[in-house]
Image 1 (cartoon, one colour):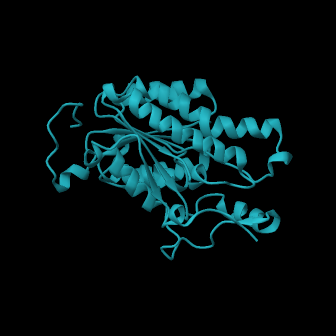
Image 2: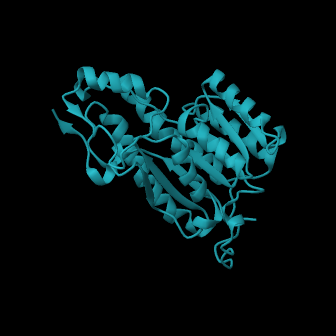
Image 3: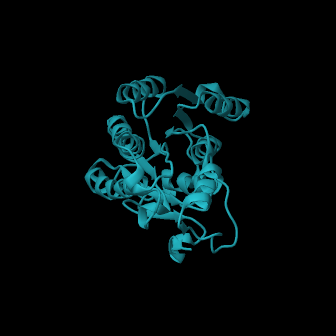
Length: 275
């Protein structure tokens, strides 16, 4: 079981990596890192409550989880919703608590972007980016925190763009930076509840929709990101999910208010460059 703030350290055994008996909420779970995280959390023993606006993708995820005999339908809750809809988010969290009784982990993964120069973006487009990448994190977190007890863990999925210039993605990057700041602040504010708050900043992990964005950058931008991560390869979403599972579990009980860069060295190497 998850311990409280002042509990004795969990014995450092292989079992400490597991999430048995815990309930983990994952937003944006139909594809990419969210999907990989939901699958990994379930494989490590957690019950999962997942949401996404992608009806087909979410159905495929639920089917995949349901076919795993070690998981079973009693450990899965799924709803189609848009995290920008505050009422839908509140209803989703209420349904999760009604189903499982409590929430131990939250992974704020939902988000998205498009490429546009700052001067060409519209107010409507800006608002969509703010709502999807920042306001939704605030709303989901606020709804979930009240269902969390001591030992809870929140993991925010941001991006390497939160730490560097991002030409063509200015508002998106600014919102990811805002989530990074929110992560550190909430780590302090929620510490006396025994809730940890961290983030992961992925890069070099191609996910749903990245191919179209890459094509737009190649065709329209005066800037380029590093072509290949310094580690020499691109990664699979499961490599971000593995770090998220660590942050959700007991091995990370003294880790809060920090960011893990899951990027093959791209943060260390620097950002975009003019061509």
